[in-house]
Image (cartoon, rainbow, N blue to C red; front, top):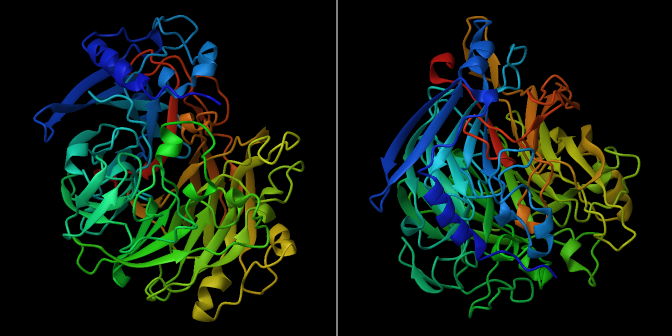
Length: 606
């Protein structure tokens, strides 16, 4: 069993903050960098900064064709010794000396937004034009932003380890400004921020997956009191932010009276068992309904990269909320996903219902449904009406029916497929899915694991069937080959990422919701033509990935293929490799890209 370096980040953070006063030399590869720093005051009275490092030669190349730019903004963390287990110290990702030779710097460095030219056909397509470092906090473990960006939106970005939420102004890309920051003292009722959903008024809801910062009772904005077991524990909450990341409310995800004690463990145990650890979050404002997916009690992932002591720390639950009063979301229902035909009472960790990481709503006014996916369970579920008092979720697909197309060596077992991102297309025709793949040895020493990738499902028949849909996955044959009912989702396209490498696929993604019009302005589209995906989860979990960001072409029929013109500016290989010695902000070595958004400067977007 590996011992984690859970005490190292504090000490290393102090070292990094001390080094922050030292001006590091800009490498020759980025000798023409324009550096500018802007700051805001935090609630603690301290200055919090962003520093832009715009590479003039890269920007000149990208803009040399005179066409307006589309950008891919990637929220990435510095890789360092704190990502490494004690038994692997000899395999550190670099040098503790901070040398500038062939090895990268293994001391904590700044986390950052990478601004990449994502304009198809651009002379600078795929080039990193700017890195926007944040300070003085290090070891944020950058995680998710919102699922899609619209004109005028703030970018909300979470610090998984730091329990902070950043609010970025991206109206003037490639430059970025900091609008505000929420510190842990502003959200004492929750920790471990995960994902965000922006509303039409520019505010956002965020899921704080972990429990109150301090163990014990906590009184939330609605006046209710719930007992928690501390930072990165349970229960989590939903936070509403204004456009500058000011906290407007904290709403408890805990169920009054607790959740099923047989299915919901807590470590350490608390008097009222709870599965309330919200991860994924999406809303239908027109239906006044919010949906959150409970994933896991996060301390078991981010503080100790060892096998969880109980499979019941991985959650089988989804929650719906009434958001008619936007500032005071009210928990409306808790749904337990059913186990499916692969369920094994001796190995419940990989049953279809386990680890509900993400949920995604439908979009059109005639539809009220939503989908959910399980990371360990490897299954996709659907409910036709999220406004129902008690939504009924049914399994409609198994990852095993799609992953076999990534690699001939893959089996048809969807268990522990490590699927993460799932998203409906704006027109409700397709469901997009990112799969890391099963790690070798998951089901025994002879298990070779599976290759990951991206797949799309045609969901038109299912969502158009309304409450009368028939699809259900209730046999092994359906798990492995797709549902037998006529309205079941069907595989529209598959694209492997890192074929032949077990668990080497993407964890997260985002779709490109912009098209360039004949007037030289971008507008939003209901039919995205591509996706961007990133191959990184959380290093301390042992699920590290290769730190690449790939572009995936998306056809009108749902077929997908890796864009082989989106290439790394340093190596020339397909995909942008975040494992590199030098960045525009210095020689900080490898970085971990977790989430990405397509964004267009305000002046270029209708």
